[in-house]
Image (cartoon, rainbow, N blue to C red; front, side, top):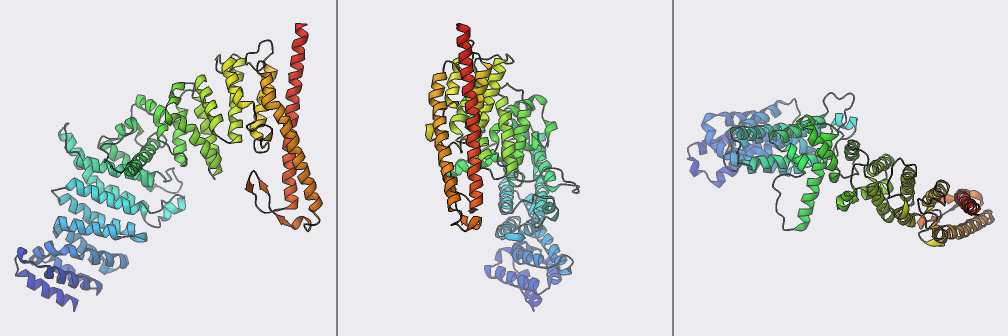
Length: 588
């Protein structure tokens, strides 16, 4: 019987001195104890452990029972008496065992767990692990840091619940586990705070650094991707509580304001491998971005900041964002809204991070599969443009026209250029950047076809229409005699680079598409009516399978676009002719 075997080993070891315990004794104790647990004799094992005579044996050998003990606890149901006995054994071991040996045993169990048992195992072992760490004298800070790092590494692969239903169900226990980990860390936070209060020159920074690393990891996961809006029907949002606790820790260890204002954490490891260094920088940037979002959008800990610091950070926190996350878009938008229009100097665009902002936004606008994120990025881009003074806007427009490689974005920028010219001509905003020779240089980028007459007019229709509308506006608003915009000076160049190639391109494109339509209609009968499935390639990309009727609709739609462009082009040329003739009449 397992209990008899255990008692025999206990009686044998009771007569031995602690120094006389052999490896064989440890093995026999572990095997017998494990057998007791697996055979359902947890109550008898608990009695053995609680026996004062066995204190020295349990101190040295008890940690070997952690593995089978955890396995049994996870198997037994919540209401099972055997589970309750196992939990009492675990508590006794945390009180009686050698702290160093038990610490390694507990950490080993956390490291070995996986899948659906991760959160269960972590929550089960947090209390005994905390008890052991509080007993440690040597390398306490290192051990606390190792524990927190191990726990976070095990949690990180788990998916973060996002919807209300997922958060309420908390299927894997992540919501509950995250808050349990924060409670686990509190005694160590209190220890740092107590030491800092004792001395303003508190030099033992190791434990503080480990807690800071934990907070940075928590900002990266799970808070960076967590849903943090208040949800109806959830009284205490688990991730909002977790965010509050992380902010509190940072405030208590005096790192919240330095992180948000200065944008860096304490000591960073020195990596000889540059790839590891890049990962460290990326993780740090993500964590700092999330922290800024928590403070300035969700207002966690905002009362800790003087208003002068809030204004300062809002002006620079754009550097930290990764736009594919909705709440980081909210953060950037929130910061921009706090700034005055026309307040950013063009010199800021000399910094790489500043010029990267609109380029990242354009990528989201053109490549992101989620419509609401594309629209949000467009709104943010406009806000970003509005914050720059005239020369900054001018520089931004030139940059985006050269780098966006997207007709829709280019059309949007050309519309912005038109708006700025209007402000200049109406004297609402007197500046030199959207009149005269500066504007001529910008119009050189706008009033042309990228590939001359061979430009794909359908693909570039947004840009072409915006350019024609701008030219029409300039011709109407700027008299030839005033020529404030310089459009009349460069009229010959516009005709050569834009209007004539556009005429040729339209003729070629219309002829091509009309021929395609005729060909489709002639082949319609042979293709077994409109039910025949064909494939069509547009702009180098193969479109989904289409019937002949669908293909004809697409081709007619393209012809309609060409007619629209041709109509506006004719109106522009008519206006130019009228203006020139009017100028000649005045001169004569």
